[in-house]
Image (cartoon, rainbow, N blue to C red):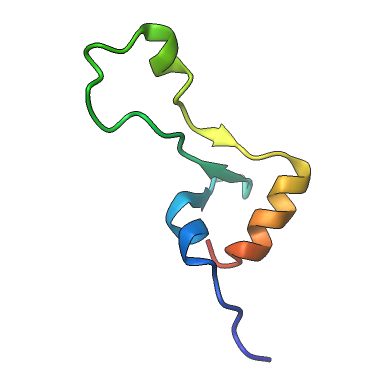
Length: 64
């Protein structure tokens, strides 16, 4: 059976955690953090993907 092709956008954004779940980093932590509020910065943490989205992303990036 041939190898599966990964979606190039998904493989740059999605990764597996130590427990094997799929996670992604949210946008907005790159620069200009001094002027952003604490709430805004706390909402930009790593996101664990849930149920249906996890199946969808695992098919987009099977080797991630």
